[in-house]
Image (cartoon, rainbow, N blue to C red; front, side):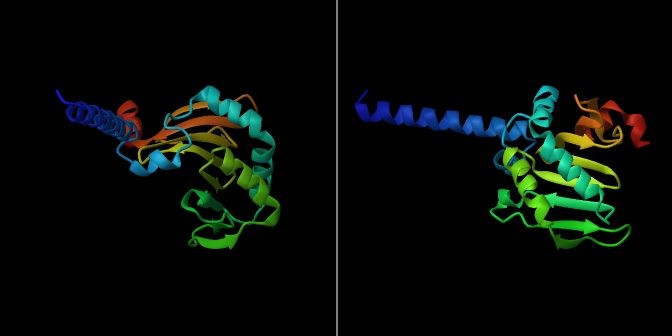
Length: 186
C-alpha cells in the first residue's frame, strides 16, 4: 500500500470518528443542534453541581431575586442575549393578562445578571413570586434553580431542596413527565 492510501485511510477514519461523535452529541441533546452551542456543558447539571453553583453565586442570585420580586410586574423574562452576540440590556415584562413588553434592565441589576450569565445561567424567569434560573436546556428538558415556594408542576420530574432555604433544584421534561406521571395529564 502506498503512502497516499495510508494517509487517506487515516484522514477518513478521523473524520468518521468526528462525525459519529457529533451524531451522538445530537442524540444526547434530543436533536437540538443549538443546545450543543448554548449550554456551557454538554452534560446536564445534577443536584450536586447545581448546589455548588447556588453556594458560589448566592449573593447575586439573592440580590436579583429580591429586586425582581419588588418590581411592579407579575412576569419577567431576562434572556442571556450574549449567547446570541447581543448586549444584555433589556427584559421582557408583563402585568397580569397584558402582552409582554420590552423594558431596560435597571442599572443596579446589570452587573449581577452579567455575572450569572457568565457563570452559566441562560434564562431568568420571574412568575408571581417564584424565580427560575435556567442553567441548562434543550428542546425537551431544562434544569436549574428555583427560588420561592416548593415548585410543583405537571412537567417537573425532579425537585429537591438545595442547601439554602427556599432554593430548589429542578428538572423539567414534558415527555418524561408524561411517561412517569400519566395521571398528571388526564
